[in-house]
Amino acid sequence: MDRVNGTDWVDIGGGRRGFRSQNAAAGIAGTEVTDVFLNSVQEELSSVIEQTGAELDPADNQQLSRAVQSGRLTYATSAGSAANLTAAITPSPLSLQAGLSILLKAGDPNTGPVTLNLNALGEKPIVYDETGLPLEGGDFGAEALLPLRFDGTNWRLRSALGFFDRRYNKLTVPTATVFYVIGPIGNDNNSGFAATADKGFATVQGAINAISSRYIVPGIVTIRISAGTYAGFNVPTSFISAWDIIGNTANPAQVKINSLTAAVNNGRGIRNGGATITLSGIEISSYYENVSNIGGNLTLKDLNINMPLTTDRGAVASYGGRINVYGNIKVSGNGSTFLDATQNGTIQLGYADAAVSNPTAINFNGASFSSATMSSNSGGSLLAAPSVLTMTGSATGKRYNVYSNGTINTYGGGANFFPGTTAGTASSGGQYL
Image 1: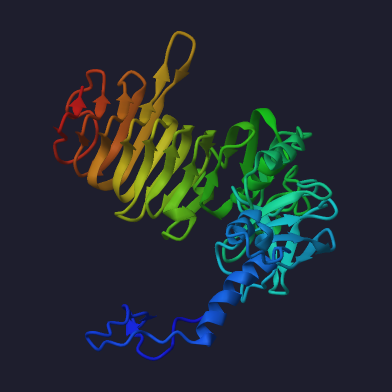
Image 2: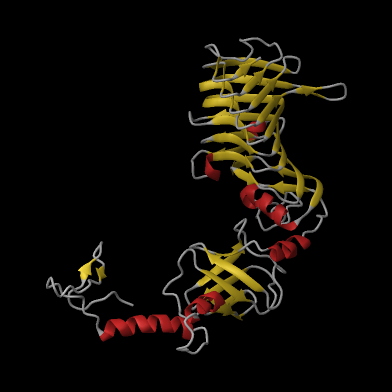
C-alpha cells in the first residue's frame, strides 16, 4: 500500500504525503486522487476479506471487521514431524518479528522438545512461556490448539489453563529426594541421583530446573553440591515443598556461588521468588545481593558471605519474605550492608524456645560496610536477641541504619550491640530497640 501520490499532495508531518481540499475561490488546488492510489486502497482492504475465504459483498459493510474477528490470518495447521513442526499463514510474514502471535493446530502429540518452522522462515524452539524451558513429552495431544507468541528467539506456549493441567498432571514423585551437583563432569540432562558423571548434574540452576519440571514432592528435596565454583541460581515456585541446598558445612569456602557481574543471575548470588529453602555449607559472592529473598522463607546456616564489591549486600528480605540466620556465619569483604530487611521483609538472627535452640555465631572478618552493618526500612523488621546471637571480629562503618518505619529489635542489646566504627542512626519513623 502507498500514501496518496497525485499532484498537489501536502506534507502532513514527518514527510508523510496527505490530502488537501480544493478551494477554487482562493485558487488552491485539491490533491489529485489517481486510479493507482484508489486501486491500492481497494486491494489492500479486499485482500484481508478474501484471504479469510469470504467473497466480497457490496451489501455488507462489516466484512473487514468479520475478517479480523475470525482470526483466520494468524491460524495455521501444522505439518512435519511431531518434533519438527512446519506451518504457514497467509500472507506470509517477511520475517519473524518479536510479538508475532499465531494459533497453531497440532497434528500428533509431542514426545519431547518441539520446533516450529513458520513459512520457511527457520526452525525455532517452542518453550514454556513461564520458564523458557523446552517442552516435554505429552505437553499437548493430537490436534491440540497451541497459542504461540514469538519472543525474538523462541515460540512461547502461552499459559492456558489446559496446558498447565496437562503439564502438571504428569509430574511424578521421584524415587529418591537427594540429588547431586558435581560440576563440569556432570550433565544437566542427567537424573541427578548420584555423584557420578553419568548421573550428576553439572550446575545448581540446571538441577533446580530439572527437578522442578519433573517432580512433585510433598517433603524436602536435598541438593548436595560438590566442591567447585558455580554460577548464581534462582529458585522459582514449584511443586517442591522445600529445598535443602548443601555444600560443605565443615569448609564452606570449598563450594563457591559467584555472580560477580550484573549479567549473571541479575547480579544476585541466590534469588528466591517464594520457595522455602535452607542454604548451608557454601560461600556466596555477588554484584548486588548475595541472597535476595522475595516473599519466600529462607534459612542461611553455616556459610560464608563474601562481599567483594561496594554494590553488594549480604542478604535482603523483601515483600513479606523471611530470612532466618543460624549456625556459624563468616562475613568478609567491602559491601554496602550485611543484612537488610525492607518492604515488609523479616530477618531473624538465632532462635530459641522451650523445645528448639538455633543459636547464631557471626564472625566479621574485617568486613567494611559503606551504608551500615545492619539495615531495616520500609516496614522491614530485623530481630537479634543477645541470648541466641554472638558476634566476633570487627567491622568498619555505621553499626545500623533504621529508617522509613523499619524496626531493629536487639531485645535490650544496646546501641553498640552490632559491630562498627560509627554510631548507628534511626530516622523517618525507624525504631531501634
